[in-house]
Length: 372
Ligand code: SAH
Image (cartoon, rainbow, N blue to C red; front, side, top):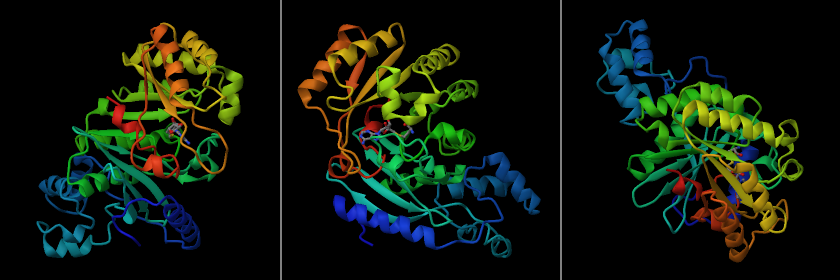
C-alpha cells in the first residue's frame, strides 16, 4: 500500500474498489466482548472493578485509550502484568489504517479498516486555527441521493460508537494535533444511526474533549428524527441537506424525500431552532441548470424567510456515475446575491484538497472549513 502520497484520483478509486471487494470476501469472527472505546470514565471504572481491580485503574484506562492512543490493553504498562495478560484479548476498538492520501493543501484522507474488514472513509482538514474531522456514520448509505457517490455504492451497515470515536482519534494521532471540530458529513446518514451517533457525540465531547457546539450533524432529513435530536438536549450544530427549492425537484435529487414533504422538514427544523435556541444550517448543492437558477434562489429564500439560518452553497463535485455539471462562478454568485438581497445569510463552500482531485465518495473536504 502506498503511504503518504499525493492523491491520484484513479489510483485511489482502484484501491477503494479493491478494498471494498476484499472486504466482502473475508469474514472475521464476531466480537463477543464489546470494544471499550466510546465508554465513559464511569463505565470503564465499573468494568475494571468487575475485573477485581481498584477503581483508579478505570481512570488510567480512560487516559490510555483516549489520550495515549493505546490499541490493546496489553500495552498499558501501568497495569499489573498478570492482569494485562488476562485482558489482552479485550478489544479497545481501534481500526487499522488501510490507505492514507495527502493533498497539497494538507487535507488528509484515510481509509480505515474495521474489525469485520469493512472500510470507512475519514478526512482530516487542517486550517490555520482548526483541525476538522469529517466522519462517517455508516458503511455506505441507503439514501441513494442522485449526485452522491456514496449513495451509488449502496448500504452495508451502521457504524458503532467506537468506530466513530476511532476516526477522530486516528486523525488526531496522524496530525499530532488536537481535533477542534467534527462534521458528520462522511459516508452515511447519521439520523438513521441516531443512537450510536449520539453515544459517539457524548464520548467525543466528554472523553475526547471536543465542544458540543463544534460538532455538526448533517442530515438529508428523516421524519421525526430532527425532533428526536432536539430532545437529546445536546448543543450540537444541525446542518440539513436541502439541495432543492421545491418538493418536486427535491424528490428527483433525493428519492427518500418523497416520504418527507419539504414543508414538514422545514417545520421540524423550526421546532429544532425553538427547542435548542440554535441556528440551523442548510446545505444546497449547486447543479448547473438543475437547481441553480435565480428563480430557485428566490423560491428558496421564500421558504427560509424569518428562519434563523445560514445557507451553505456547495458547487457540485463531479462523480462518474451521473453527468451533472458544476455551475460557473457567475451563476454561483448570482444565486448567492438573490439570497443576500432577501437577507438570507449564505456562503459558498470552498473546495479543498482532495475534493478537487477525486470525487470519491461523500467526504467533502471543504465542509469542515466553514462550520463554526
Ligand atoms: N447523509 C448526510 C451526511 C453525509 S453527506 C447528508 O446528506 O447530509 C454530506 C454532504 O455532502 C451533503 O450535503 C451531501 O449532499 C454532499 N454531497 C454529496 N455528494 C456530493 C457531490 N458530488 N458534490 C458535492 N457535495 C456532495
